[in-house]
Amino acid sequence: MKRIDHQHLSPESAGPPHALDEQTRPYSKEWLNAYWMPYTGNRDFKSKPRMLVSAKGCYYTTSDGRQVLDGLSGMWTSGLGHCRQEITQAIVKQCSTLDLSPSFQFSQPLAFELANKLVELTPEGLDHVFFTGSGSESADTSLKMARAYWRLKGKASKTRFIGREKGYHGVNFGGYAVGGMAANRKMFGQSVEVDHLPHTQLASNAFSKGMPKNGVELADELTRLIGLHDASNIAAVIIEPFSGSGGVVVPPEGYLQRIRDICSANNILLIFDEVITGFGRCGAYTGAQAFGVTPDIMNVAKQITNGVQPMGAVLTKADLYQTFMEHGGPDYLVEFAHGYTYSAHPVACAAALAALDLLVRDNMMEQINALAPYFENAVHSLRGVKHVVDIRNYGLACGISIDHHPGEPAKRPYEIAMKMYDKGFYVRYGGDTIQLAPPFIMTRAQIDSLINALAETINSL
Image (tube, rainbow, N blue to C red; front, side):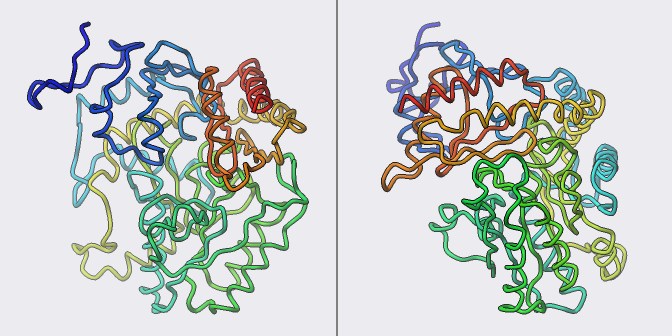
């Protein structure tokens, strides 16, 4: 195909080159400039684009025809592997049957089928499902739900939230505030009333395998914050069972149960953000089940559709749902003035049902739990590699802390990720960490190749 020079075409005649036809040809700077990329160093990317044009199983294919092993399951999303035909077929069938239905005042059967499937797969007591379009939307939905619940209960002063340092709850107006990653908040200022628990990444727990032994007492910081703000002013505590984007910070033994007990004793809702931990990453359908602690509200997304369609959900206990129903006024009125055009989108519902069916049909939890010890031993073999100062893991997730360049904590992880991409491996870099989350179907040989390449790359810096 002859290359089109976009600089000399009118807007009417110009069109983007198809990446599969381009292969090794460069993309024009003008064509690249239109897209403002999220969470990306745009200037760096557009100076040397990294284009992925297809995917299958555990591999991406780049625009220059290289195979890249997916070390993060897309974005913590694609544990079943890419381009699963069962999900594709479900989407095609749904698109040709009902491509979109109104989500307000009308619905479609798959929404109710999926809601019941989620209730079945999540901890007992989480009986009602509110659909969203993403993890960020799930986070903000849960915060609004918590505040509204207390107002309906006659406790309108309960408006403050407690998050946790190194926590990540998306990028919407409430989620970035309750999150505990300063880089995500510094540009935008304060939004909701919030305070933060300390993170649980202790130097004494460096290189722990699974749940660390030390640090359960950090949960008692919640008691101090309750004393500072008073429980009458606190709506909810929101935390991830383990923090993903913060670098896979795993809770100490007993920590989550202690948080649950303190919330219960002080009439404070507990929200688990399971956007990363939900549907397999922990070796159970939810982190709540893996750690044996049930929240009042649970946020999910990502793996719910295997990443194929944007979708999220918020699950709640019956008391929250019934409170809204009881205070809703006449039956025809809206009980919760919140929702999205794409809540329970029929194509997303079809994708989610197919993905969840695969998790069950293929006994994926058993496969994950069988592979997790091998993955754990593999990642901890990096102990002693130059610049590696800590390794944390749980299930099929791992965070590797990298020693800082003076004044530039994010530089070495960036260099590692770029060198790994050149070698044919995709890993995530965030802050001072490298993060791994292999697909549930990854083989031991593929894990070995990933970890060997990572050791070689880090040692080469």
